[in-house]
Image 1: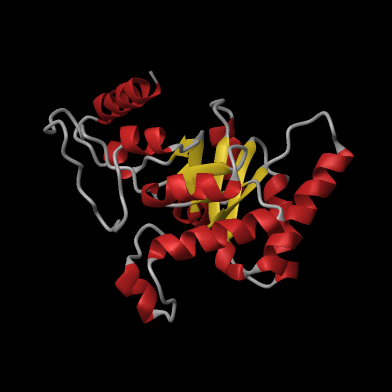
Image 2: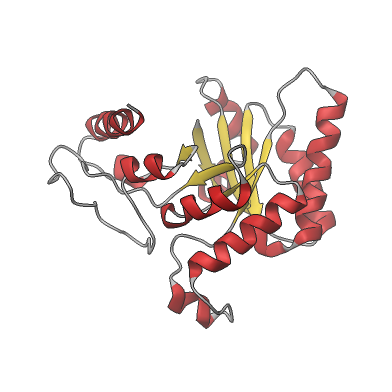
Length: 221
């Protein structure tokens, strides 16, 4: 899939979805809704009306009722068109840029790993199709939420970045606090990987993308 985040969507709006959808792979609409339940319900309904949106997300920290409102919209869409694909809704647990110290600053105590699993359980109870979480929590979420619960993993920093990067070393962190390589995330049980700057920031983006594909392939095999 192609991921559209708030930066692109703010600049170009729904036209970006329509244009990129014509390329074929489908869209992960990464807008991370977080508002009162009624507002999020309307936003999810609008997002599901855009072409080619396979995944969309919201913040689990918005709470049970907000997530239930989003799940209700998805369920209504499935009931109207039972034979058509409907966007899956994911809950963002704790941003991969936040470590334990950053969480304490906003009043969330305890290790990030524990809070992530707690939020994943809440998301499943609310009817979410899965979560977005860092590579470090994938195994624990899988144990807590089961094999059919989607886990989408950002914070991917491959062993090969650009043309040359020493094998066995993680790439740059940028502003990410909880990261892993593609192979590590796949072996932990991730369903989808989110890879942005390791490709867009590479001297040779095509070569970087191919190296990541090969690393994923080696983990799957």
